[in-house]
Image (cartoon, rainbow, N blue to C red):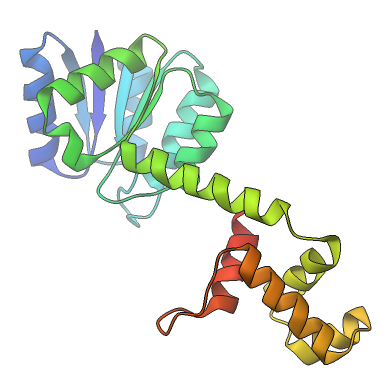
Length: 214
């Protein structure tokens, strides 16, 4: 099995290559940015690429976007995303579009040799590997969608206007409702979304975030 490792940290690249080498997995190239990753894949045709989601020059999502481009060109290429912290946007996009041969692990998992080798092997074989924290996050989003599903049509109208930044008065005018009715709808929305009063949380903002995540 042959892999390409893409991470801006030289120490991490070399460490991963050493761990994989001990398991008989060849690292055919190590690169530090997305452009070099795409060139390395074109030259070496690896079985799996290990890609840091955040890479130069902006350290936002260059690695993840490169992984999406690579998967579009070669549906059989195994993709194992690595991240220092939980990143959901591009991971979810890849998982939905092509779950076979896809993995996503937080970096603190890959220091364990068994976990790293198992993940690379499973991804190369067309399997799917997701970090437990990622699974928990995605299940949490599913719960949010289920909660949104119990809202009435009018409550969804109100929440949609809240998401547009409308005040209660503006919602009243838009939906031709009186203030008490709007307040009642908002109270029901917060209850159904399991957002009880908390001194440290702005429940209206949390409800809007739930709407935007659907």
